[in-house]
Image: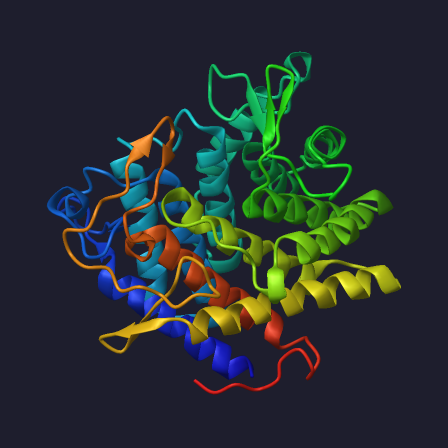
Length: 378
């Protein structure tokens, strides 16, 4: 079973490499992911590049290196990091705290798990998150600089990073507590998106659930405080009930939404493999998390298209993927977010999420029961 998911993850990685990885501006020792396939000229030239999508590409490369350590992938990790910094005009930071949190998480894992470290960058990011904490304004940290929108997609990944990097557990706990006190739906127990001007933004996205699961799981692992595991138990149950119909994590189309289901899968896998404790509630949370990842992964694999012997994943894992053609409508950047391409499967985000899901399935498959992992063929 492990090998089946390893093979599928390797195929997903190969698809990204073949269709999306490209040297940045002819600069030696660089790469980035072209944001669409088939790509238009501006996309191939990295006139558009989407900072946070590239951070998830780096994170997936770390997953792959953990699964199957290879010297050539270490080189790819270094190229990706170098390309990211050069395309960001020589800086690590930008104006969006959620963007920076995603890159911080990927760089921290690259250093810890693959030995490709950028310690000064991690300290730079930690300082960004620590100094932007503004409880007097109702936060949390804001979504972006000079903004009064405080949301889960910024505070969740920043809390995971601060729990992992240095001795920042107290602030990570404060961030998790702020989310729990401010953004939990009392009816469904899902996480709302954020607050703006003191009012709830009541949208409920899959990736918001994922980052809160990640933060609370890290804190359950690193502190003796039982409240963190209890929140994981509650949220895993809410996700299973409301966000995974038929056991398959819901999709959110392409553009930025293409990553949402993959992020939830990543952190469900973290719950399945990392949540401590032998209580019935913790055992059940790990089992439900693993089952959701594997059921989603089977659906995504079964509904893929195959192009040049490599997989193309659907934006909605329970539906058959549509193969995009050159010249279809491009994704558009509108008010700080990327909308979907006309055919969402064209977006790098969608394909990264499929790859992320295959890596998540591989990570949980070894520790789950036979009933969860009943065999299915490639």
